[in-house]
Length: 209
Ligand code: TYD
Image 1 (cartoon, protein in one colour):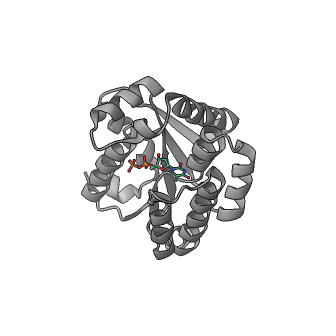
Image 2 (tube, protein in one colour; image 1 turned 90 degrees about the vertical axis):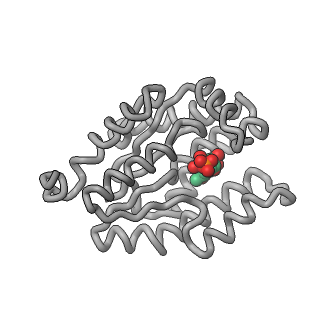
Image 3 (spheres, helix red, strand yellow; image 1 turned 30 degrees about the vertical axis):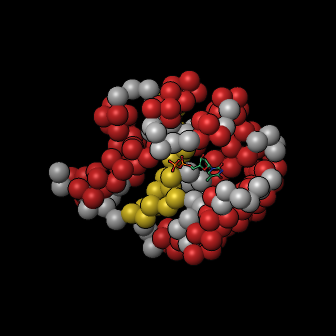
């Protein structure tokens, strides 16, 4: 089972994944959490290039690096875990490149979708949980978080394009997404996420509680 989380920066994804991890641990469910572009040795090297402040990467380069890290992650970690019947949780996956590089950086959603298909082959998330927060709300959260300098680096219009990119993806493939309203209190959002995930967990674990 492969479950992926998506959303714009400031949507609360990281907090929600942490809470879900607590739930899975309580139930003794084994899982693998992945976070691109790191996670594999090659991915960590790619990540250091992406984060290197002195390298002025073009949007095209940035896209290829995310795609390269993903191709490695799929073969080295995701497929082996899925083959063993393990639960894989992803903090972002292919849709992030479509929304951020395709729509946000305006490279075109279609080309990113093609590159993604090449990179991941048949390996796709079974469910994608999209945590939806309007851009203004997300940006005000990012401003409150002093460690987060994204809003100084990126413009409001950038995040608008990213969110619109996600909306287009969801519109195209409604069945693949579960949308959760991220403006609700943290606990309420978590309850909804657990409800979405629960049917995919081993039955004996759920009955034990
Ligand atoms: P995020 O998971 O929000 O990390 P953090 O909570 O540590 O800020 O994502 C990191 C950034 O990487 C985010 O701005 C989105 C960006 N990103 C892309 O632009 N393209 C991609 O393909 C991926 C996976 C992430």
